Every structure is written in C-alpha cells, then in structure tokens.
Length: 496
Image (tube, rainbow, N blue to C red; front, top):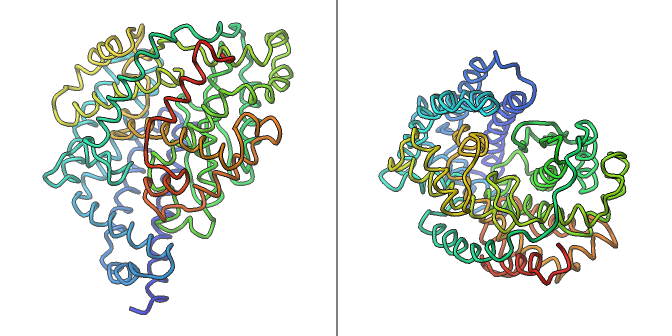
C-alpha cells in the first residue's frame, strides 16, 4: 500500500479511537467531580457502551493492511504508531467484547460505591462491589495472558514488557534496604503544622497557583477537587487534574497538586500534532509516575520550593500561617513517620506501601486471597511492613481508588516512578544544576524545560527503559533514590 494512503487511513482510525477515549474521559471526570449519586448506574452503562464501541473499532479489520505497511516507515512517529497499534490489536483480540463491556460497567459502579462507602466506613458495601469486579478483572487478565500469568498480563497494560518476576526483586530488595532507614530515621523532621482550620477555598486557590507556577497551561486544562486526586487527558488542549482538601493540613492539597501537576505537564508536553496518534502519549505509567514523583518529592519537599511558596502561604492563610517559616513547612512535610495512608506518607516509608499492595493484588488475581479477606490481610501487611495497623477502613484497604476502579497492576509503577525520578534529578543536576539552586535562582521553568527535552517530546517513540536511558544515561537502578533518601533524611542533614 502506498505510504501516504496507508498513513491517511491509519490516522483516521486512530483519530476515532482518540475521540472515543476522550468522550469516556469526559464522563469519568464528571463522575469524579460533580455527578449526582443517582446517576451512577446510568454512567456505568454509558461507559460500557463506549468501551464496547472502542473495542470493536480497535479490531477493525480494514486497518490491518495500512498498519502493516507503516511498520517500516522512515518517519519514526508513523512507525511507532503502527508498532503500538498492532500490539494493542493483538492483545485486544484475546478479550471478548462482552467482557470489555461488563468490566467497564463494574469499574464505574465500583468507583461510585467506593466513594460513598469510604466516607461512611461501609466495608460490606465496598466488598459487595469489589468482589464481582475483581472476578471480572481476573477474567480479563486470564484472557490477555492466553495461558500465561494473569497478573503479568495486567501489569503489561500499564508497564509494557514488564513482568512480576522482573518487578518483585526490585520491590522486595528496596523494602529490605528501606526498612532499616525507617527504623533509624523515624521521628526525623519536625512537628506537624497547626491544625488550622486551613480554609478550603484558599487551599484550592493555592493549588492552582502552584500548578500555574510549574508551567501548566490553564488555556488547555483545569483544576478540580476530588476525594482521590487524578489527572485525565480528555483530548488535545484539555488536560484536567484534581487535588484534595484537608481543613487540618494544607500540605496534603499542595503535594497532591504537585503530583498531579507532574502528570498534567507530561500530557501537555507531548507535541500537539502527535496526540491523536498511538505514539502521542507516555510509553508507560512508570514513565508518567517519574514526572509526578519528581515534582512532588524532588521539588515539593525541597527548602527552595518552600522559600518560594512561603509568602503565598502567608497571604492565603493570614491567621494560622502568620508565625510559620518556610523551614516549618519543610520539616513538617519531611517528617519520617509510620503512617497508614499511602498518599500521606513520606518518601522513606512510601515504597513499603507499594510492596504491600503489589503482594495483595497479585494474590487476589491468582486466587490466593479472597476479596472478603482483603481488609484483614491489608491490616496484617501494614503491621508486618510498617509496624502499624489502620484505625479505620478509610486508612486500610479502602483508602485507594485503584482497586475500586479495577486498576490492578498499576501500583508497582509508583516505585518505578520513584526510581526514575531520582535518576532524572541526578541527570538534571549534571545538565542544568541542582534542583534547589535552579528553583532559587530561576524558578521551575528550567526544570520543566529539561523534562520537556529529555522526556515529554518523545511520546512513545521509545519504550520506557530506552527513554529513561536516553534521558539519564543510565539503566534502571535504585542507587540514586537511596542516596537521595540518605542525603535528605540523614540525622546530619540540615533539612529536615
């Protein structure tokens, strides 16, 4: 087939996929932010219909010849799009459309039930929705695996080419190396901030200020508020992110804004002409998490960031923040403490939360753990890894939205993101200067410029290991991350 004709057919096909994805994302964003509870069942049905249409379009036989013709295209974006499309079509062909629709409907229903049950502590209601959802997720993994490991097949949805056998040694070794640090550094840092109240509206205004300062283009996105922060790309020119608000602790809102802002900047950094192609996205969630964890931890926990933000905090909260210094925020934020909630945990303990969730979700997928036993297994795992037990369901297995949304196999990507973020921070220091010094002297723009050049602009031209090797000059290693922890949290460090 003539190359330009093949590309024309392929781009039309990919554009329809992008439109279906965008329409589903609009419905999901509405569900997460303003949808009335009574619409949950109708929304589940709507999303299931869109998922079925997408599945059928993805497998459209007429596009097979054009994609085959593009695999050896001289244009790397065309060749990458064809390669990715063929891979996704082969994977999708293993899954019946009926399962796609049923799973999507159960996922949407699961989020709605979780959102209400988490607030009231209604564990039976949550488990009642999670049980059939996990069964469908297991069916999905088995269909994708085609006789192989179902959990590996689910991981592959988020981190292509990666298996549990590849991840488990990294996670377990990291846990063994981090646990002595937790014991040694527990209590490092400073006291928590005053309980407030910290005004809700002022927190949201400050979150928007932080995200704008990072470089987020508000003409092409917006910031909302949800129970569990999330970022969604609804299409070219429409990237939406959200944060949470805790009247007793503004740090939760700000750190979530930094985390989701990192995701949003990546989405906005992919070249616009490429966004309706299969290569116009990040190559994996590990790559995406490298951006969110970079901004959250290497920027947001630094003294330079709080020196920059401190005046805005004083203006936003003239009462409770009047006597607080920039150092007070840094010390409170970087307190090493065994906390039950993953998203509120410090850098030293964070990956222990990921180890637990990876163990549990693999056990559920393989049938080694019944969903009914998940709350107890979660609490026991927290006791083993962190030496604490959650005091309420919202601090236990109900705390994250992922399982309620049928997102299984995602959690390990957070640790990959931590490792890649530390590697990027080291590379940035060699190319631009230390993060703190750059922030103090020039602000966030050079940091974003480095990430745009090394990561964002490449879309999915490379697989994540190759992309990160290109960006940092190194293969995946935990050494920069562990060095960062020891440097930042050592009792001899100046901060905290």
